[in-house]
Length: 595
Image: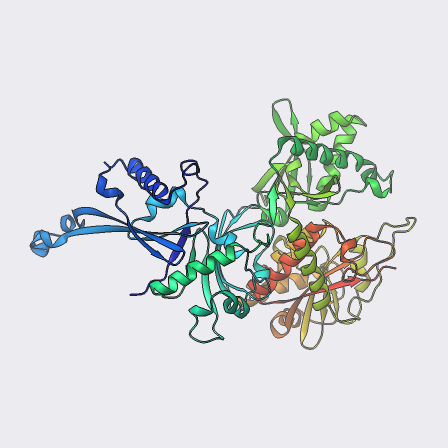
């Protein structure tokens, strides 16, 4: 007989086990606890174990038979069908094979035995083991289960096409729970060659609470597998699966909140136009923590302030980009330079999003901030109301991924050939994105799409067409936390465009065409049908385009350490992966030269 084993690890640091040194005592404690929780009377025979030693490993077999019980089918079916109901009697056997090595105690279960060990297993065993042998570029994810720490998606189950690299799966905000992985050839040869039929085979393994080898093995092969697990667990973890740490220290959270307050208050002179100081500038992404799409797609935003015991509207805007300025200006009008009163006022402001007359989402003003701050020279992230630190290993990996993306996915030269100039009368501040986009209006092959939002979604900022390709270019100056807003727009746009193309929805693109005409912009002498056909007859390519925030214009790909925003790195690498994987659309990057 052969089995495809699920190997669990017993957590010997469990409060009921940590003082025990003998394996028999550990196993007996586990069994006694299971009987107690089930309300069953424990008999002496219920603690009987069969022991077998092979090399340096000792095996303990525990069998528990449940007395005969009649199948429920016997009472469901009529007597004319059941006849002799004794035929419906059944016996259930629970089996646990405990495996004791020099340092660990493992368990393999059969029947209904998992309930016996569930409270005593290391629920991260499979994932922490995989972290020791993971190859980001070589391993491929076939399916995954994850928990989400941002947005609405609490649980995610995903299946992937062939050759979906693990480097594309790992991203901020996603906690792996179970990974179905095709290991790369080198890892298999190093650790699991005895499981292969031929040397070039790949091996599928599931890592989660347990390790499951998706291959039938006999007992001797299982023994070799357990020996190899001992080798793997002696390897150092790479810290790639556990990439971030949520900050739970209340004193540190209070310190971070005060730093956020200070950034907002010091930013007021910039909003009022009385300061151009770099130290007063505050880079952040402003977005609803509850529903990103509803926030971006809203037609209007009602701003409410707290008056006595209820919230009353003080302004309604149709552009999400002016919400922050509008609220802060209102606070300044009411409270002048009184920092305490301004911050108290801001805590009482709520933002309500509407599509027509229907409210789609709402949240407090302070909950909309996503930013990267620095505390004692260490980067800290505010994402959807929670604070996080990154592990050093993931920062290094993320930096490398971003550098590779800029170097390997470049937009061809000459398409975005206009330099990004400074605003008149300033030394460093760049012109707005809208002013930059307008530089391409009227040029052959270009369509300026800025502020055109069919169905509440901006398709892109600039379209450039060739005879075979259609480039949908999204533009944002400064490779900082501002990038998160742009990549959110790209992801939403990619989904909408791919859905419209798949459904052959010409009317969607015809509405875009009508909006271009209403704005008085060039349509390159195309009629409505010809414009819509561009999306069906050409290869679609999304482009992320940015300009440096530094006056000397250093290349991001060669100076990635200067561009310190990990939010920007997160957002860009994640967005590129989503567009390529979810929508099968190519994704390129471009750094626009500064003037």
